Image 1 (cartoon, rainbow, N blue to C red):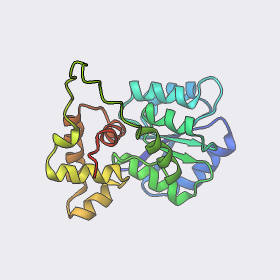
Image 2 (cartoon, rainbow, N blue to C red):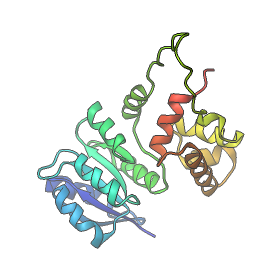
Image 3 (cartoon, rainbow, N blue to C red):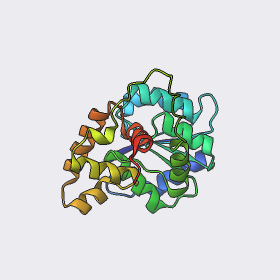
Length: 224
């Protein structure tokens, strides 16, 4: 079955360029184009895309505002932010609002296809520079220890203490940025098994998605 893509960018030349890069792929179908977020939102119920390639800076409704609506109303759609800006604020806003990945507009065809295919399979795609920005924002110094006369505060068990040994291996790989296929190859298991184990970890962690899981795992990761 083809991966259905909606391209959203206020520059027609960009939309045309993306279409030319992707439309000859056997597993890709460009099902529509939109010049702004408002137009895109109106199209979603009609064309039912699997993936959005979404520009960040657009008139009427920005990419981030569009992403917020899509994440809330159409959680099954995967969104790849597509921007000319390698800006930490844009990248972090994308992560926080549910984007499955972030690509720069000078990204080549091979990487765009890799990103699209990864996010459809439930993975995230953030290139090294973006991943570095995300990890630095998640790893923050610990809070100071309460004074001795303070009331003790009950500590929520770490996600690392709630999961099985195999799930711990899977979570470690996710934190390291590995894709489902790479994890499957490492442990000699199927991609479906990886997906099921990831879903189990997310359920035990009490979070909504892989982004929130990785954030929690990094915050609570045991010291080596």
